[in-house]
Image (cartoon, rainbow, N blue to C red; front, side):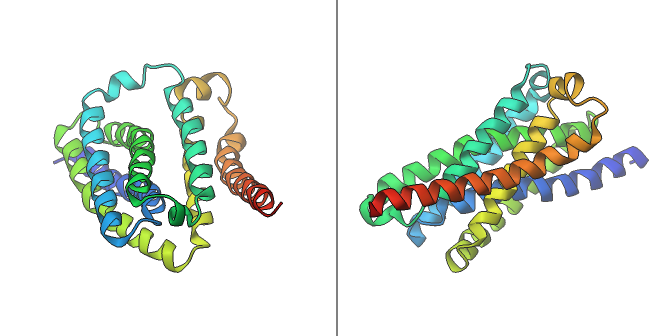
Length: 224
C-alpha cells in the first residue's frame, strides 16, 4: 500500500468515470428509441457486454498495444457510430421493435469493443501491473455504465437536443483514440501538442456538422 498504489487507485477511479461514461453515452443513445421494457434489456445486455469485453481485453492489454494502428482504426469506427446514432430518428413507427432492438444491441456491442479497448489500455497503464487495481477498475465500471446508461436514455427522450452533445462526446473520444495511437503519436504527432489537443475537438465538431448536414439531406429527399 505505497504511494504508487494510491496514485494508481485514484487515477483508475477518474479514468473509469470518464471512459465508462463514454460507454454509457453510446448505450443510452442506441437504446433511446426502444420501448421502456426493451430499453432496459438493451441497456442490461450492453452493459454486460462492455464488462465481459473489458475482462477479456484486460488479459491481453499489453499485446493489444503492439497491434499497429489498432487505436486509430477503433477511432475511425467510433466516428461512424457517432454519426449513425445522430441520424437515428423516431423510425420505430415503421420498424418492428424486435429489429430495432437487434439494431441497438449491434451498435452497442461494436462501440463497446472500441471503447472497452480505450478503457482497458488506460486502466492497465494506471495499474502498473497490480492485478488488484485492474480488477478494481473492472468492478467500478459496472455501476457507472449501468446507472449512467439508464439516466442518459431517459434524458435523451425528454431532451432530444442532448443527442448532439452525445455525438460530440463520441467524436471527441474517437479523436483521443487516434492521437493516442502509439504509431500516430510517434510518427505524426510527436512534439505537436497543439494538434494533439485540437484533433479531438475538431472531430467532435465535424461529427455534429456532418450529422446535421446528412439529416437535412435525408429530410429533403423525403419531402421531394
